[in-house]
View 1 (tube, rainbow, N blue to C red):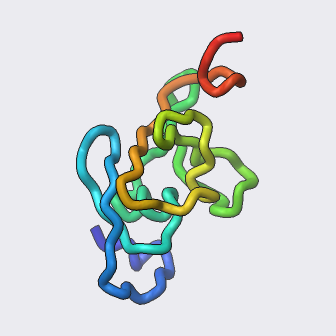
View 2 (view 1 turned 90 degrees about the horizontal axis):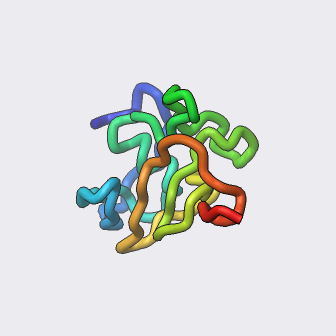
Length: 105
């Protein structure tokens, strides 16, 4: 999907990074954040609140926390502050997560 109508993006160098999004293979331009990669995948939600309301990256600078995702098994990762790496596993979050790395206690 071309998101140029919503976001100004730097020209692509041609190099892409492969990652997994919710168990499916995906790719994005090298050098972007996880949030930018997810927005480029369709602009869909990155997490859902406890009531099921969808949220997506909003501020893109680490202030709003609407972009929380699970990165390589670590929940509550700020997608806008995390650079995408080759082979990274990203999952959208649904509902509340614990404050101790997603574990109770």
